[in-house]
Length: 410
Image 1 (cartoon, rainbow, N blue to C red):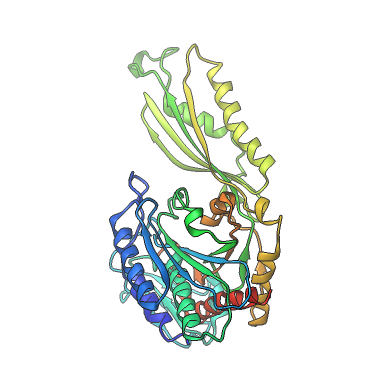
Image 2: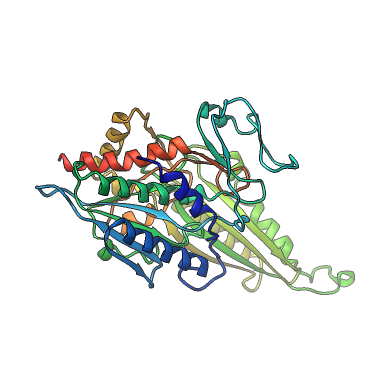
């Protein structure tokens, strides 16, 4: 049933599709366009209907028509094509069969990079399973090509087994999730389902309907540069202004000191000269009221610092990126409940917890299609120590099929 899952996944990850935050095109890279066309051809060969590539937003969309004799809600399954900002050229997956759960796994021949149980204790969860790792020089791309492979394989299974009754199912594979803009142009009228799931989570059992509220702040600090030998009471050092700005934010409310439902300010970039400096932050919180207070803190610091000068020395460009999809999904929890039931019937323990991040579903939910997130299997994503279990990918595929089956029983 799952014989094509691993070969499909390996084929996908060997295709370079990293997104580019500096690009002004959609998708942000031509490699994603090429991959989308490959997926379009594969969907057509599988036998799905209405397969098309939307050049306006970079999504490949296809439909599996209903085979029930009664009307049931339509479902969508979504995954993203791009990979994160880490080397993704010449990905060379390594297969570790029947992993014992205790041994460290060398990635490269020189032994420079090793998946150690001490550093990555989740390896203990995969006794007897087949793992796919990197060779240490690249990421793997399970985020989110595991999700694409699982959706594609689930559609293949449903097409091959018409006795499994299901309503209309739509699938979408999109670009640029890793740079936060993939769902900005998502076409809900084209997708037109009652609810959907992103297959973009981590280990088996993950089922998520809470995400961060997210904003980004770009702060420019303007100095006055004069010769340092005669600078007293004249020089204004933009770099010092940047330091002063940052030091007014809560020192413990940063990613490396927070967990669970604790939000943060994350300084992503600091650069500049005495004349001009720039700070770049992302702002995150699950609670909307606290999220707004965090943004207000940025503005308050800006206003306080500017009061000390006779002209504006601190400029802030701040914008929201996405919101906590819980506010939408909690209005009708049935879509979470059917996914939870699917996992339980398959012997998978659901792990329902808030995401310390966001998914395409964060935006799509607010566009009118409630879209929780389901596990795809990847561990240690976005880097050279990424790996995925083949058995977990099979479980994720089975969850997709089971959700479709349970939905048809309504």
